[in-house]
Image (cartoon, rainbow, N blue to C red; front, side, top):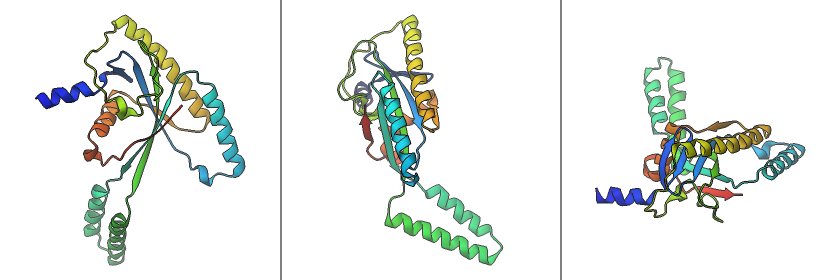
Length: 215
């Protein structure tokens, strides 16, 4: 129990309400999941247009943002199990041989290299009691690990006002991302809980260190 309490003191998340993360210092966060585009496959003109649009997007924002790339090893165990189970039900011998060879290929590929999945997030902050530090969103989503013994209290009325202002910022960021041709999703409570659980329990998701770029 003592170990659990000491761990809770290190986590800067005080609560998650709807799509808003409340930190112990009184500030708020919204997290947007963003799709990726294959920049290398675009023509030179398209690449230039993307860079120019991204520059305009950054210049249109007058508050800090955190851009996070979260990489983790893709767990293929369940997929391979499904392939093997399906293979055993095949009646056509040719298809069965092809399925066996496919499963073998995937297993050999996994032994030779790590197959990675990447997810991209933009964290939108709203500071109530303090100005942002030079490290942005404390270096990453997982960077909210710092001792804090005091949870700064916010009244329900204040919280409603701050949430409204945070969502206004989030909408501005979302509109800018959409103009870049990106698909976005504002994470809700359950998705935020799963995200933080994965970050604080890397063994359960084979998560790798987060690469962070901040504005």
